Length: 334
Image (cartoon, rainbow, N blue to C red; front, side, top):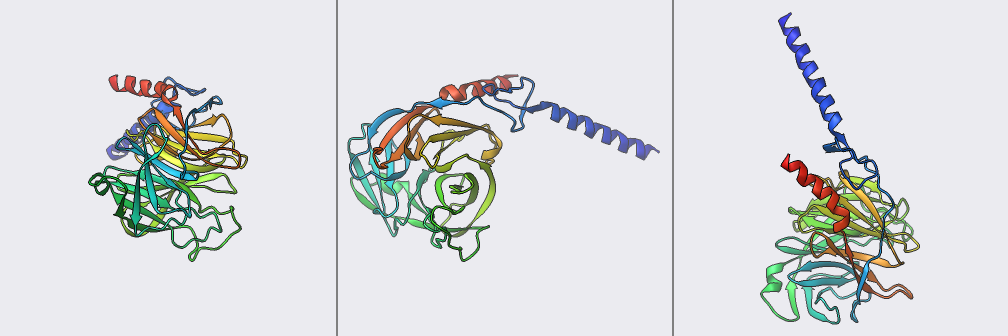
């Protein structure tokens, strides 16, 4: 009898604890329409009012960067590369953007379809992951370059690039060809952190994006699927804030109506499990890349498209993020 009493007490305790946890779940972002002041655990239910922002134009890209498709802010410079078919070169611009300050050629690399750029404390990474022609590339890869090689030398230089080859765990091997711009295995967005590569797909038909990851180690890697969400458009670039707390995904519709997704409040690498907020951007454009200069400022790069010029813009996110940040700070003081 005593044994059953103990079991019942444990069951009752577990139910009470579960109910307490459920009571703490809800929308934890004060910026949301359905913010729950009692919630302590985000349950993914936050809903936001439509938001539109007007990026501040900074400058036209200098000659030679008409099709830039990836960039990072590092060591006081804006590092950019061109889209597929160009030379395997990354270029540094100063804050005026009037000229290219440095060119770094990657020895051993080929620019088949370079689509994004990222970095961590030791390396620069360039994603040769564009795959929209027929979805059947068998030579997808990430190039990585040690930052110290670039810092140790001045002027235009050549440095060795290491190759991280990869394939998707859920794509048939060998890959099956499809019509142009119909594949689910095209990637134009990448971040790197904690020794891993994270890719966000540009799904041409479903307008969703899938998150894949693999170790940022040279050799042959298998991209493991972590999750997906309905992006409502074509994802073309990714950027992680310096503090690692905010992820920005750029994109546009087939008619070049631009947007960004701001993801925050996530834990570890569960980027899609935090708060997801879409911001519409004024003006059409083929915006292909983004990078943070600090935790609040996002730079947006657009390629030349017909009558639309290639350009760099700036977007302030501090006003969108401050309500959530202030609440988190208040909770830690309680």
